[in-house]
Length: 385
Image (cartoon, rainbow, N blue to C red; front, top):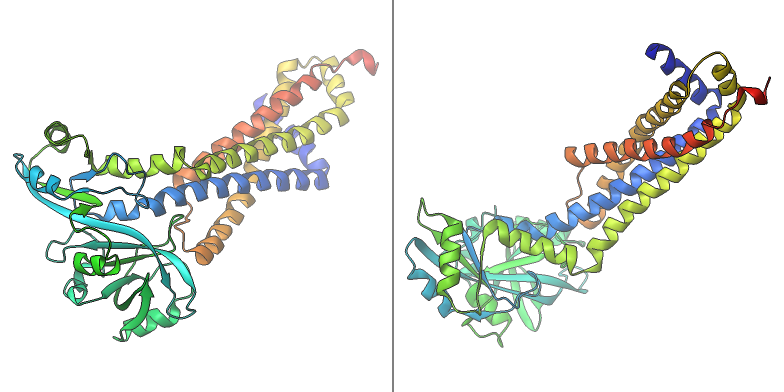
């Protein structure tokens, strides 16, 4: 019996080809909405945590007043020295972070950029281009520029690649771009500069050298990070919050997800796409059922039960979900590439996200089919005989 249901569902859908095309376009549109919102949300979290992921540390010290990397409150440097007294701690290094206006070397327009400083004698990043230029950033006013920053920097990057030093301004300080690395823009800043701690303090002369933004703790091999974090938290004063590296990454994600409107907007956008899809598919299936009420009533008169007829509508919904998903994911891949090239955000099609939207599409169409089935249950053979 099952093998005869599929042709009936397919024939009903393809009988009105314009209607089928409209349905597929509607489902594809709903899928694109969900793909874009989920993609932007993932790009938000990825772009704002890439610096976190690149640090060399087992534990991270921050101020409890810090909200995220762009708004990191400072704490006394002596907390790092106090951390060194705990058994299992190998090293404790300081990271200086601040946001500043800088002039695009090409356009001379000002934009926001993240400036990061550390001791070059104690490398703290796993970033290609940074560790190769540790001696370079020891020079006065020398910085490394993020080649994946948002904006037009083609000429600047080409000059640096050729070995030329490019001069511009950060705040009121003239600096020289002497090397490149790549980490990418984020929703918080258009790009990043990495330099030595001394150059950082030259760029921000009002910054107290004893005021640290982030403390990076490296543990001895075999030391448990979770247990050491708890011990360190108990040892240090209340002006310090001790996190493991995964917790530091989650700390940033949580800020954007719960403390800003942008995380809520992307979630709401995904829900709206889902609802739009439900409405579109419902209208198509309802119209299809209404147009074939006489045929359904005839099948009832022939002895077919409601379960069979309802399964036909459900299979129509399943076929629509699969056919509409294909153009939806294809167009979304293209839109991801277009957005990525325009914004330098890490917007890529992830397998898990593709599967997630496929499941949401099938559920979306199943809900629409379930609602449309209520009309089918009213099919009465007596209406046509």
